[in-house]
Length: 160
Image (cartoon, rainbow, N blue to C red):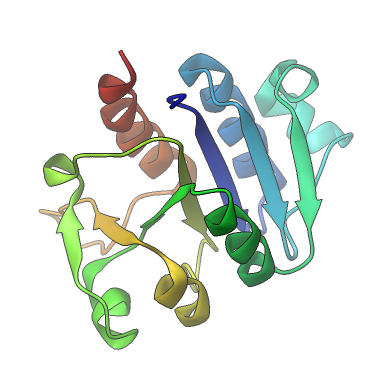
């Protein structure tokens, strides 16, 4: 089975974050980005500003509803991993694990959530696993694009 890596942007509001996700996806060799809900899509100058051309190289698809996309991906036997803080995962009735303890199975799709609200409960419930980045400071989370970089490079270790 191919070790394909996909990214799902679940209602990401900042076009600059979307551009950064495209750029990091290019560096990681991501097969495709799914832009869902309110997430902006290329072409847009704010995305291009941070993507620096990666938005022209990485295939992408717009999907209005993330939940429907997950149903489609699951039928294709793609493992769905959400990147979210531990508390929202518990509120959705799911257990989350430290991203360093994930033993990813491919093909894999990593869900990145809204900068304020995170990944929706409905989407968390459909995820096969939920991972979190441990935080030592007073802030509860990192910027979504930075979080993706950290988790994405860890997941990529298993594609070799």
